[in-house]
Length: 555
Image (cartoon, rainbow, N blue to C red; front, side, top):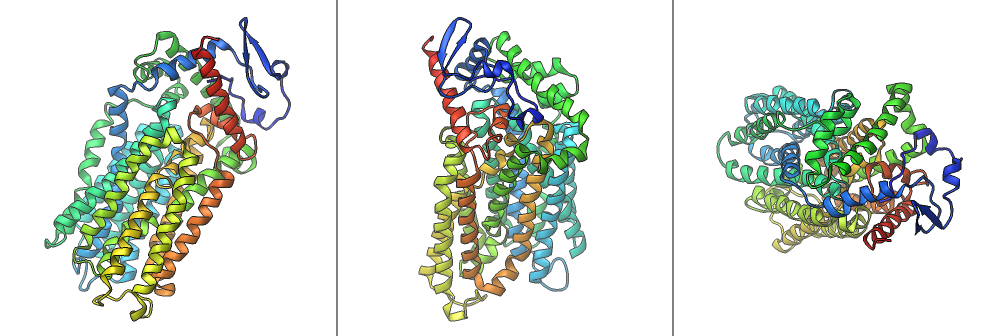
């Protein structure tokens, strides 16, 4: 890669170049006696020894992932598993809870209240998580999230009325929001550049695996009296495991440097880059320290409210925020979590005898195709994988809408419990859902969680919090309105609406989302100086490939 000194935010918005930068704006640069052809203008000072040191870590060493990295990522991703488990378990719970919380079975409003209370908690937790972690570090926030998970899981299992159930679900939601914000941030800051996308995707895999586990447990306890209490209570187990793991996990090196603990940061980097030389680790630390110190200096100059305001006034930050929030909004507005929350109820109405088991098929599809994303997200790239998968989401949703339309013509467009529907159309609905979920898991289900890489360190926590809060706001809107929506415009109309929103999301990706695969966290910040940076990102990535090839040939 070309190693650049990271410009400050004020410098980013200035078109004026220093004399050293102007001297490098030509087609050929003489670096330490070697002439390297770099197409296009070079806008920042480049030193070959720095570039070669970075290349030796990335090109030769960085893909040799150690057990330390895998252990760290999987331990952190337990937070994602909890997120997924809670999302999946409520579907089976709503079917089997019966009258255990009152004299009568739950009404549609009470189901929406129980579901949306978690989402409201997650919205608040996600909004606070990144901001708090900028001051305390990532680990303390994860610790708090697990305490909330355990408290909420136990509270749900002991509930005998609507009110304590709603409060307990709210506590779980706070934990979900904190974990959803911090886990990808934490993993991204501890991952080697070339593997960052795949490492963050491990967290998404954990989310989908948690959903599979939830549906499997739900299928086992569905017919058992009071079995739903076991379903929600078992959520405390992985939270306890992660709480123990946190005793052994390191803090993010960027946070350690901010806290003047550079020696600890170097030890963490040494463990991450176990195959690198001492000189290479020192170079990583030097680059990181420069970036962090500039961020700290900016933070001292600008307080919290000034940084928050800058998210809307500084063009680079505003563009990054639009991209992050836009992706998170479309992830929810496409309607995926209606399947997670209400799939058992939906498949029961369609006519499947064991709706929770059918929901397990959907969750399993989500899990398997997230594994596909793990393999390809850094090779294909975030933008391209979104461009390939999103059209298939639209196809799946349109097919589902058409199927529901023809299936329910005999019941005036509505799914009616006890009605007999065509098994052919029911099967087509299931196939449509599988197509939709497979495409979602490959792209939109995981790419938005790469959000931390879009922001500079000084506002990474704030930006991630706002983006995560956007996600949960959309989740709250979808979860709280789905049952009311299908009553207003029918099930076919609801899925048609989701298809339209999904198409708008595809247009957004085409116009606004630059490719970030292969760029360091510091390099990503340079992209948004040039509008939404789609062409600038391509230029940077091409430049890195060419320099890497020349370094490999010894030029």
